[in-house]
Amino acid sequence: MALEPGKRGPAVITKREVTIVINRGGPVVGDSQEEAPVNSKSPPNEEPALRTLAMPADANWFGDIFGGWVLAQMDLAGGVPAIRRAGGRVVTVAVQAMRFHQPIAVGDLVTCFAKVVGTGRTSMHIRIETWVMRHRNGEEVMVTEGTFVYVAVDDKGVPRPLPPAQSPTQSPIDSSG
Ligand SMILES: CC(C)(COP(=O)(O)OP(=O)(O)OC[C@H]1O[C@@H](n2cnc3c(N)ncnc32)[C@H](O)[C@@H]1OP(=O)(O)O)[C@@H](O)C(=O)NCCC(=O)NCCS
Image 1 (tube, rainbow, N blue to C red):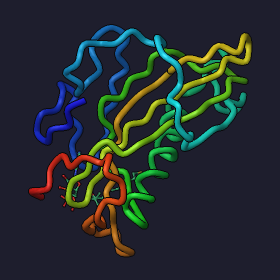
Image 2: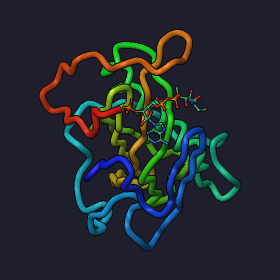
Image 3: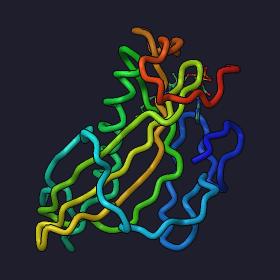
């Protein structure tokens, strides 16, 4: 997925403001690729950033889990690789290309996978997928995906430059500042 600053989809996310598009038909916002068939693959073969159970307190009276709860889990999960990459404190500055594919039901086992897909001077783009194992039948499906942007900050909350990358897989998206 291309992560080019300034080339965002129709739901532009500005500083200090999060806009989330719940879109069941069109392409993923901010992603120029054709929409891939959902749930046509297996969960990523990597260590999850977060795993938890969807509980009744997080659901409406239909038993569907609140989108805000899922976003919170994704935000927590994305913070894991962001903190590791930044070597310290980070804050979430934006949510991009967010997509809710399928509902989560009470009792589903929820797993978030998160990885750094791009870095700038102080910011990191973290790609996050949420998968569930359905409590009813054990089926595994991807229910959400999105790219969260985190910024490394100092103890006063001021952006600080990222330390040099440890992993050769991280690709810079913009180092011009
Ligand atoms: C994140 C924060 C520290 C950035 O401060 P700032 O003065 O706007 O800093 P800058 O303009 O230098 O931007 C810092 C980086 O964020 C990136 N950025 C800022 N807004 C962005 C957005 N909407 N989308 C993507 N990246 C963004 C900038 O491109 C820059 O990246 P780079 O250094 O890699 O080039 C500040 O906006 C903040 O504290 N926001 C609140 C964070 C928070 O509380 N999050 C939790 C929400 S409950």
